[in-house]
Image (cartoon, rainbow, N blue to C red):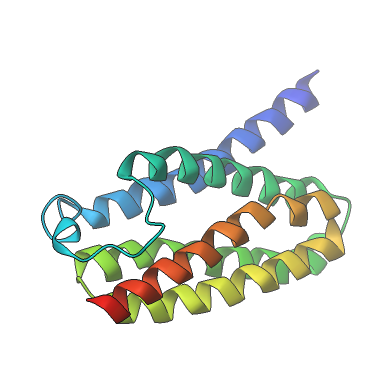
Length: 160
């Protein structure tokens, strides 16, 4: 029973870590959504603001479960090092996008970050698949959303 609680506690920590990155990203956005962002021309298919919170919350929870799957899988920690590094890189790139796009109001630099983030997610999925298939599959909705974000970010650069 104690081992089960330990596993669930570790899962909770991973989810909280990922959600914290989302919270930090929101902090980097500041009031720029209300002030600067809504002055921009919006690309076709731009979702309403209320969509982003639930989508990102779901994605951060899936990321937390995904990295937990890697943590608890039977592969030796030494062999999981690359998976941890790639996951950390994509999480960092995810975090700084908000600061680049909203904080610095620089869609061009944010687009570069978004492209590198997309590549990092693909590499993370490939690496995770070597250790745990479910862990890799849990990141696919994230990749789809970032693909959509690449479209939006590109469109913001072109039309503004």
